[in-house]
Amino acid sequence: MCNPSPARKDQGGVTLIETLIALLLVSGGLLALVQMQMLGLRTATSATLRDHAVLLAGEMLERIRNNPPAIETDDYVVAFNELPDAGTRHGDDVRAWKTAIASSLAGGEGAIGRTGRLYTITVRWDESWDTDLDDGLAVVELRTEL
Image (cartoon, rainbow, N blue to C red; front, side, top):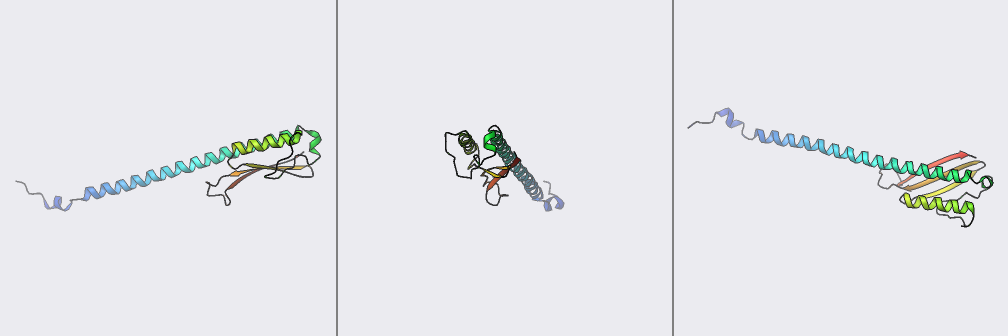
């Protein structure tokens, strides 16, 4: 019978510890990859929503430009949670725009303000899942002079 050498006897369990350390390092790396993937997904989702909000604001700007008599008046001015009367061109434009915002952006709302010839079109929506926002609302504003 062969007796195990003393050096071999002292190394019992070293391979197991090395394996556990390697497993911890690999697990940490995989966790970092998952976190990066989640951040990328959250950023891409936010960018898509902002892109859509910009398109909706631009759509409303075109509706205002296509109704020249209303440019000099406050016909298109509307606050959040406010709907103009239906049956007029500007009222129908704003109602259709607000409906599109509400249906395509979670908690989405729109408002239009006017100071002189400067129009401010604002679209906001709920992004409470984004921890970078203080109040959970993302906002896009489009300002233009007509």
